[in-house]
Length: 329
Image (cartoon, rainbow, N blue to C red):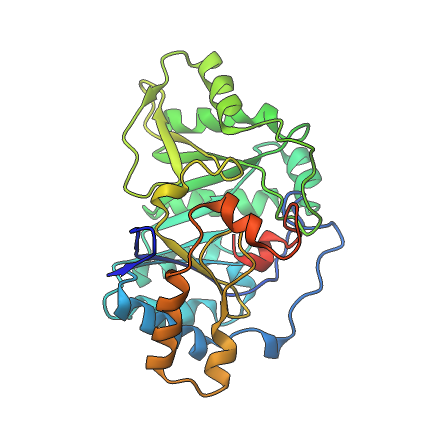
């Protein structure tokens, strides 16, 4: 087992396969986009597989593939197949914005992927366009329908943004009435390539919960899974569930079980740190597997207690200015 200096077991890797995305979501990046990584700055599939094979041999049992948008990477389906074949890996899942995903859903199911997180911040076409700056609502909804039709577990991730989509909270909750989906509302974070949009967070997880309870006073708390990032609830009589993720408030850090690996090979032991080790550079410098293991264990021995400590350790004070697309959503 992998454990950090605070006694937390680490068994989950979030693997970013690209920094590129085909949407320009307000909370993630500027409308004009970002300075994308050059091809040689990205990890190759072989490099990703080598690192993942090492980590699954050290105790990682779950990998979630993220981006940017994973499916803008051309070799994505074959890479998922190689990841699915890794020894000791028990759970492979992915997060997608759904623009390119609908035709691939049968292949994902055949690879053994059983759970997909779909980023969907609104059920209104015009608000979708204003948030994402792309007219792709229909393609995303086709992905949603395809995932359900093929029996995959669907979690909807909705970032709550003041003045942009708060009126979508209750319509999104209503999806859980008839559908076996989990709708999770996420506090907006400062990872948008510019820094925080607000002096303080207008819609934190408590305010989101209050808005749901006002419409559904019988909202029931249900058990949270081990190391869950979401506080989970059910509206009586609904098939699906509702969750809130205190991503900016960082109230779940005490049970954090995850590492992040960016598309450029940067290991992050916390979402809010600057990165603690570049594994791509180690691979290209000829490091052995044992040398990489030693450095990984050393990084875990110096892990921040929580996101607040990780942010204080950054070289530049204040909110981070990188984009979530660069970190891995």
